[in-house]
Image 1 (cartoon, helix red, strand yellow):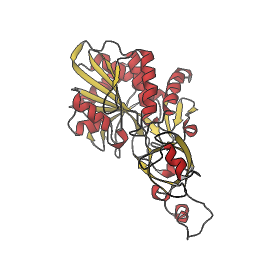
Image 2: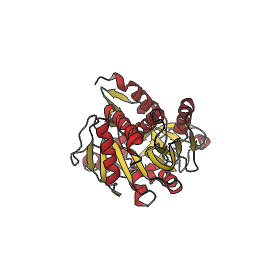
Image 3: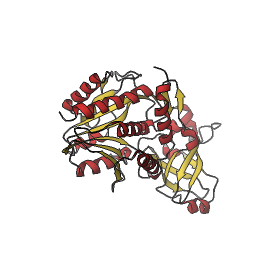
Image 4: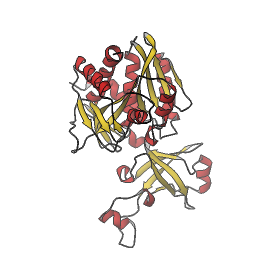
Length: 350
């Protein structure tokens, strides 16, 4: 397959990636999504937990399923600011400073966004400096990193930079890069999955039962949005859209085949629901990989673990460098759309 069929998908993901949305401060991506959905004429709303919910009415409104994709991203959170205007931060979600490296980050203040440089200290040092250990035998930790702002405390306060301020990779560093049929970028987890939701919102018409497409909030800090939604809406099933790590420990291959999870760190997924998704993939003539992974959770597994839904599944696309500068095959992302469209129209009511 040539690259041209993926151009629109790449463009949509690029727009989403450039919308900052650290957990709990997701206003920028909310605004972009609202404008997109207004143009689409979708039936959507925002709930009290900051989820954006699209409803596609079905022929039988007494039954419902949900497909979720979280809109928040990992990053850092300000802990303190010293007299020199250096900002100390801690992780927000599964973020590691050595993944981002020294470079520009954006601090989302209450009144303005300010940029600074995530810093680890000089290299030309001896054992007398803590940075020496980073060169020799261990990675840098958040406790040893800081954001260099070269600003006064008054300037930072005026922008609303304070303990609790969210920090993300600088916007100019986030712009996605095209590698043939692959996309490389920060925050493909989970902006690429939001692009899948938007495609489904356009393509699914008159399903046999109600379909909720949920751009969920604060997933990276405990699936907060999905738990809130699934506690209040009766669902027969919930399918989470996610990335899936490419690693030698898992039998997952890079390429256009999506991945269906059997298990993750929160527990088992529902085998009957997985079977229906596998049937939908076969009907759509899309190859599908199956994996059981650790160190991972989704809206689906967490909602099912806490008894909010009777059945859950997770459909994902294989991704390199997860929670870093991620790389994924655009064909796998596109094939998630094909599988879920077929599932919603032909298999969800079984």
